[in-house]
Length: 142
Image 1 (cartoon, one colour):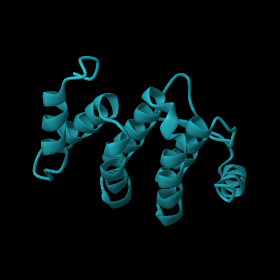
Image 2 (cartoon, rainbow, N blue to C red; image 1 turned 180 degrees about the vertical axis):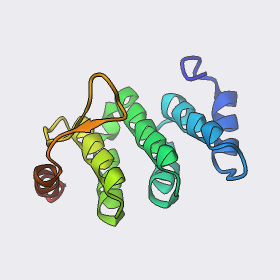
Image 3 (tube, rainbow, N blue to C red; image 1 turned 180 degrees about the horizontal axis):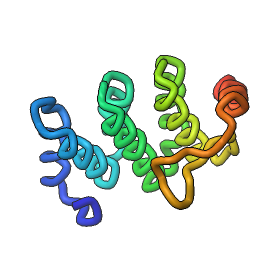
Image 4 (cartoon, helix red, strand yellow; image 1 turned 120 degrees about the vertical axis):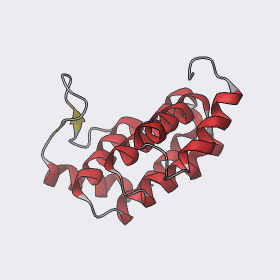
């Protein structure tokens, strides 16, 4: 659906992504659709999922959706980085913090010390302590 850029698909994704009664897999796919079809106006919704969602896979999908919007609309880089900065400083779960570092690194083009494994995108590689220091220094400049 994402490659079709279908507005109907986007409206369907919006309706299902908010429904906590649906299967988490459907909500996860909806976030990917929003990432591929949506634009910067979708970023607050995605930030909400990154901040308030309890399901780790949904949070990761929200981060991926944010990255997808950036790839299609590089002019929203600063806006995306500011949103990720807010989420980064409000997040306590280490596994999400590591993902956020990887996202910030990808979107900023800075080597912050965390990257996805080439063999398995579920695995992050890097020294988390050094990555946190680098990320904090970088985010202080935004």
